[in-house]
Length: 433
Image (cartoon, rainbow, N blue to C red):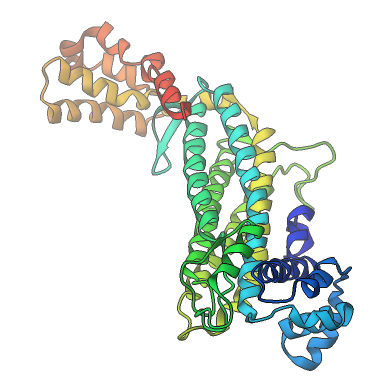
């Protein structure tokens, strides 16, 4: 991933040097386990374990240019520094024992950062939700004014969804916390399963119960698909912010800092660039999940069609997920909210948002539902078509409605507090977890 979207802490997990360090960590854990089980000489293993090996990506590249095999180039580089005892490194193992187990280590490190990101984001969403718990705004369905809600309820929905995504991610992280030291086709022909058990324990992983030459890629497909789901939730929030920031809406907007410029041509512009950036990057994360699913179908005991894909999507999806969560956290933390515009916008349909309250009052008063619907709708359509009219005034001028509800009954339907009476209950149910 390009530096522009890379948090250095996350990017450091995916450098070539970090990859080779993960490989070496796996090799040492396996060798130590073999020594404990007297499969390799303890004194020889000790020489390796105590050796001061400096992994040099450039030197490994030089060797790979000849061997055309990255693991062999890596092992050759290690043996150059260790000497004769280096022959016990990788004893009885195959390349995927190292690659898949090391990939699991990298994903665990990346996931720790991502879990912190989710927690930071949900904390900000919760804080802003309580801040705007009773800030009235109009709810929209199909993009059209529907009924009153609060901005706090909007944020509460985002919070609940993020909590669900966190639970999915925790499960996905566990699904890829697997290592393997099972040999060429997974049959333990040259090393006993005890080596795998011990090595994985040292690495903080669990053994794959059954592997062939690779850990099966349904695990990874699940992981990257959950990242795609998280990205979709992040984009959902970003799109909502983009709508709120539209000039004719302007109910909320991204913080615009001193010295910031919105357009190279139009000095007045304040654009939702952060949210738009998130929308674009979420597409990449979702597309990567599709390639992860394509990786599930490998030939027989293994091919390497998945390998090239994972060299890209492993770093890119975790780096981008980290980036968009951090960016959204900053956007929401300093999001500028305009309660007065929210109230003004709710008023532009001149009482139409209370139409259901009128309908239900008429039904309660004894009117047939469909007949009541016709009475309310004919007045509502008149308001839609004439900006000088208000639904309450139209209803008060409608003798049939007045006869049924009375003037006080009609006026009582236009009660904002009544519409929002259950916000406290919704909050207690949402945030009790």
